[in-house]
Image 1 (cartoon, protein in one colour):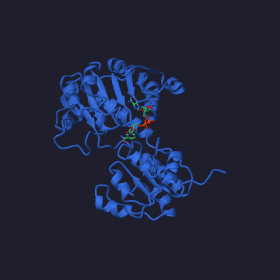
Image 2 (cartoon, protein in one colour):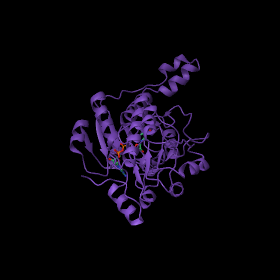
Image 3 (cartoon, helix red, strand yellow):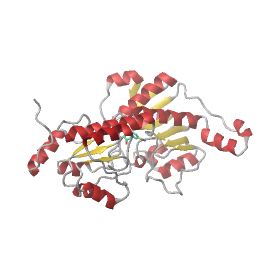
Image 4 (cartoon, protein in one colour):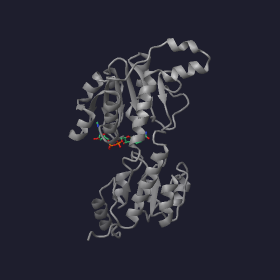
Length: 332
Ligand code: NAD
């Protein structure tokens, strides 16, 4: 296990297995722990690449405590007959609330007003106008679990008009619940007062919000990124803020984590930044720990897991080809 997790999940795993906790940044400790591991649980910092997999001859399952699995080499795991599982939905509400907090905070100039108050400048209260969210347009990039719930919350909580862009077809019931309209990426950029990004990091989304995309946003747009840092070009965001094209930028994720001290966005008055902490709530941590433990225990007990990343049938085929014992008991 790469760092601990909420006791609710630790307890479940402890009942069935011995737990070794290794520092996710200490490759030697990971190598030592991997040697006898049947399962590896990893959070955001613990990179599971082909080398880590090669250290673990007995490994049956890699489990992601969280949602984005861009730091796990899934094809390499499949090629070794290793199941990968994750915890989709465990922190959906947490991310939605984080986005809403940033939308509100940036609309009302919280970052600068808090700094001015601390500096004794009470007169700052009349120095800038904030704005209401009510009735404005929210563009959601990636209308998956988080995107859909954000859309519903924005519509019902703030009477917002909801647009979304996604590569897969319109899920009609979800569209209805959020009163959402599917538009092209360019149209979303042009029409939205708020843009919130909820895509996974992969080849299709890296630098999706690049300089060219930012040049097309509506003037005064507030951009929020709680997905993965490399989806956004941070230098281009700083320039768009300087040009007052963007009103503000909110992010829970960075191109490089942790971000370097000379980061172009840290310390600006028009940004709200958090250290990848959106999911670090009591509920989110408990949900992720419980779900990740259940995923591991299912695989180790020969049950097909509820939330696989790679296809269990494919994994089983690879195992058979490699002469490894099957992971799953035949269905009765
Ligand atoms: P999800 O898989 O339910 O939704 C992702 C959506 O993005 C899908 O509908 C998919 O079709 C769409 N998509 C994929 N590629 C696209 C593209 N090129 N253009 C447009 N749409 C595209 O995932 P989710 O649970 O909503 O989470 C989204 C992401 O948020 C995760 O992958 C993760 O990286 C990130 N996340 C961050 C935190 C945090 O702590 N900040 C917590 C949870 C999730």
